[in-house]
Image 1 (cartoon, rainbow, N blue to C red):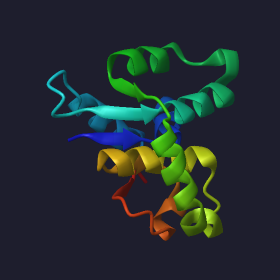
Image 2: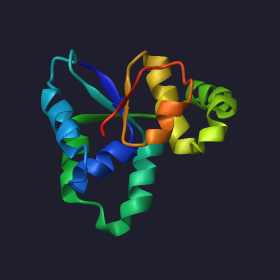
Image 3: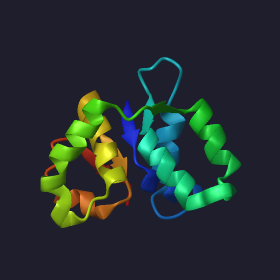
Amino acid sequence: MQFVIDSSAVMAFLRDEPGADRVAALLESVDSSFANAAFISTVNLAELHQKFGPNMPASLIGTADSVIARADFTARHAEVSGELYGRTRSAGLSLADRACLALATTMELPAITADRAWADVAAGVEVELIR
């Protein structure tokens, strides 16, 4: 399975919060064949750096380098994020949330998140809540 992972799901995994087991299973399914791959937007990676600061867990850096492929935030992602604003504003989705959804939309992949607010929006992409 290929998927796009939101920073909230990564944080749940790192902090061993509810849903961490689901994220662990997804990350364990990733392999080098590209048939099973995980992607994270660089905007979501920036959010992780913001949340953890200089205390970014070494496990995240290792996981990101070996398992989760970084996807640069492009002009197309910016356009899709802007289009999503009207549909997601009432649920309070942030720019980082919309960046993840934009990446999932452009790659036509499901978005994995711990953020329950995503269930209430018509993002036009499959959203899987980990908890």
